[in-house]
Image 1 (cartoon, rainbow, N blue to C red):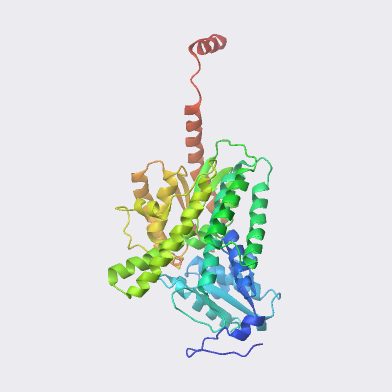
Image 2 (cartoon, rainbow, N blue to C red; image 1 turned 90 degrees about the vertical axis):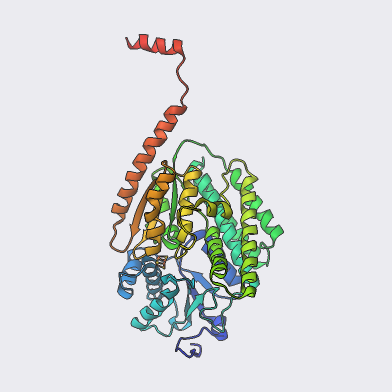
Length: 444
Ligand code: SF4
């Protein structure tokens, strides 16, 4: 075991020595994105491992160590860590954990303290916990995110968003089942290899890769038949994590739906944009404003790359850009609603309805006040704006049963299927006058 150094609050520091021989466990959220990002960390010298343990035991472990009135994502993430640490698979004297700290007003900044409390209760207090944050919160001598790493991580998000988007557009219609999923995995490997060689994240290389991804997905043989189209929005963890949302995407696929899950890049843009708004409203260091502005421009440029790549293939539907999404909620909800997913959650629902995904599952974790306000709380307003909206809010908490959640979604889908059938019927050509006469005669 490496020598334990502590800061003045008593927190165990992740040291440079630990960087050499510790395994850092990372919880699972968005599968494609996280596989790419964990590879980037490995390439930057961190022995990181993405956790894949799931099942009821994870929730049970969470319930043992986290009070059940805490945000559900905290319970799941901490449960996954504790389940992994107790599995016997890891040397607890050479294992660290990593968790994000957003630095906003939400409890997400405090999950790290709940995790340390859980470790203490389980007698594993010596396992260091690394904070992943860009807000200057907790620092560790053996862990830092350089500008070059940040560029790679952003590239990982962009690739992840594109692979997720195209997989969702192709998979429901593919003729040879599994082709789209196989292409996703092939690109995860290919991109990880590129990152390992220090490639794949310059503007030119990204444009090439993104265009190639779009072209390869467009080449998958598909058969388009009318399907119910469903968007998924909500608090970031339960929106993406199959463990958090009881495999919602798989369930919707089984119900023969086409799914659209808005990407993570917009969430990153939203978080950076909030910093700019804060400085504009409350003042702040002009240098900080300049740096945040640079970051905003960079992310916008990345989003444009992604959108143009999708547009190279007319068979795909490109997502709207951040400016359009932000404009959708002007006069609908204030831009000051920025805790959790804030106004972005309302905006994503409006954008989904606008682009033909009027059926929406709004995933709501237990304990999440911001998302109840900007998600469930905005449904009536969204319906006033566009009466095609067919939204069901689904609560996710340790006591909610999957069958109950799925039954509520099935009710929403029943309405969606009725509307789809009406649309199909309306598109059928009117029978010719003589034809209808023959039909009448035959009926007589
Ligand atoms: S967004 Fe919701 S679930 Fe996440 S930390 Fe904030 S209150 Fe908790």
